[in-house]
Amino acid sequence: MRILRITCLLLLATSLLTACTEVRPWQRGNFARVEMQWQTDPLESALNDHIFFSKEASSGGNSAAGGGCGCN
Amino acid sequence: MKISRSRTLLALSTTALALPGIARADAPPVESTLSYKISNYKEDDLSRSEVLFGDLDRYDIDVHQFQLITPVGRNMALRIEANYESLSGASPWFTLAGSNGKPVVSLSGASGIRDRRSEISVGASYYLENGSISGNIGYSEEDDYRAVYAGLSGERHFNNDNTTLSAGFSYSSDDISPTDAKLFNRVTDEHKNSASAYFSVSQLINQVSSIQSGFSITEQSGFLSDPYKLRDVRPEDKTQFAWTTSYRRFFTTADGALHINYRLYHDDFGVSSHTLDTAWHQNIGGSYRLIPAVRYYSQSAADFFTNIDDFTQPLTAPQSSDYRLSAFGAISGSISLVADFGKWTATLTAERYVAREKYSAYEVSQPSTALVAYKRVSFGIDYSF
Amino acid sequence: MIIKQRARTLAALTIAAVAANFSSSAWAVEEGEMAPDFSLPSIYADQPAVSLSALQGKTVYIDFWASWCAPCLLSMPLYNEMYHKYKDQGLEIVAISVDNPIEDGLDFLLDTPLDFLIPADPDGDIAELFEVFGMPTSYLIEPDGTVSLVHVGFRKGDIEIIEEAIQKSLATH
Image (tube, rainbow over all chains, first blue to last red; front, side, top):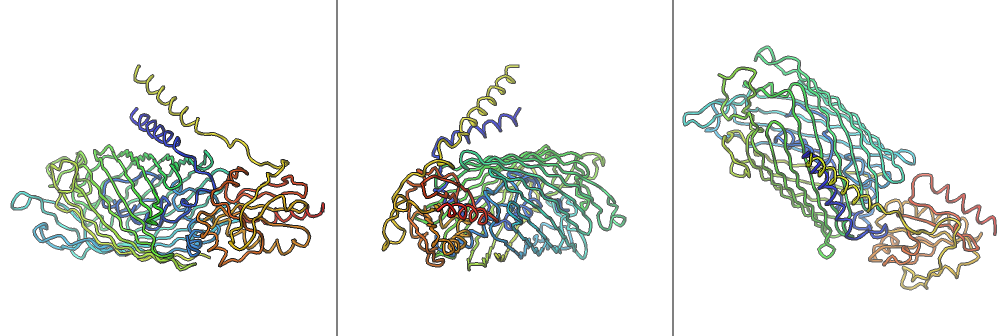
């Protein structure tokens, strides 16, 4: 139940945002910038994920869990 | 955007493969990119008053990361990743009540721990007209640990590429065989499985900003305890939920981008957490970028956390004094400098992380003595060809 | 259970809201249609404006590109080669830059000089007119003004497809 509620809120919030403006294909220059990516440095993100996974109790979020290690 | 940036752009389209489902993969990468990053991670020593006897130094780890991303044919891309870590140091073995009643910790090993980890993974992505499908398999090995894992994910664009839905699944099968098992009366061969799924939506808000929100669920089963602690008993099942929202906004006048990420987490060990990290990506000239970043993290304690080991409890009762299951908060700051030289890009990063009971947003009824603080330095190189 | 029903309604509403946003592109210049006429200034300050009607009777290859579009940059040198190969047979290439500011496009051209016509469309008016739905998008226009090929994206092997279409078109001259 809680999962369903959270997912619906997520989708609802996102669909409300689409009411803003549609960005046309030729207007997408800024999203091609390195600094506007979801991950600007994949090796850095992987390293941080690995460190935080082994030093904290939390993991996950935007991707499925990666490989295992004996560090947790 | 100067011409030197276009090389980075060509290289950057390859990062779409980096983690399935996060980057927006519009088309296969146009170039191949080889990346290498070397890092050193060093934890602060504990102070004498926190330790019962023996070693004060904790972990010192060197990490080497390699990655190759290359287009294959018209519609595919291949990614190969290899990691190598070498670790030395000591970690908490057990905790007792000190002379003033507060917990003191004893670190393991008279000569400390030495461990190495090697990992290799291979992934492929297939690009369709409106999305892509990716798969990957990997293997990780340490002196006492082995993991085999695989994942599959896909993403689909809608609304003229303004909206992207992505989803994925991964599975890992791990074998644990602790070193010096007989000597320290540890378990010998144990096993654990982990299955995880995620779903996320990303949306362009306007020409300068975008938002992404995703949800993941992970199920672990098997031996989840820490075999190197004198008394560490954890349930044989663990379910985890995480919800992450990310925001990106470009500021044209300042020529910089703001990143904000927030994650809410909960698992059935009783741990909940908040993570908030922000970064500012400042372009300097046509070839440099300076990135200061701050991260705040706070978690609650696991239901069975105890900051002083209780050896009177039966061996079946869940219990752990592992600081990673205690309530604490952590603040970390980092700074990165990126230099773009056409085909080459270099990145230098320095980070400082401090975990403290007083940073916690949650109530701390049992503070852990062994909270960690560390420094990390990394140097990375990317070459596109 | 009332709670279960409410959850279901909420789910249905959100799915509907999301689905309503999945609008398909309305009208786009398609193969078989007449190409719309347009006139744009050149990206170079010292060159004259480019208009499609002035090129009637030739095989015109129109390509919408930008300096921030990686596949576009890859295609440009290949297009330059093709232009030199077929311009005497009646091929005209019109590479419309949608860079905003146009200096970004000029910076790229400084490093990679191109010999065909390069109009500037920083406001995207002509891109909108053609209902460009990906970057890059190119249109092959026959001497009589009809569009014979619409090509979105630029991947390995695409230059051969495009060259073949151009050869076919030039054969009708």
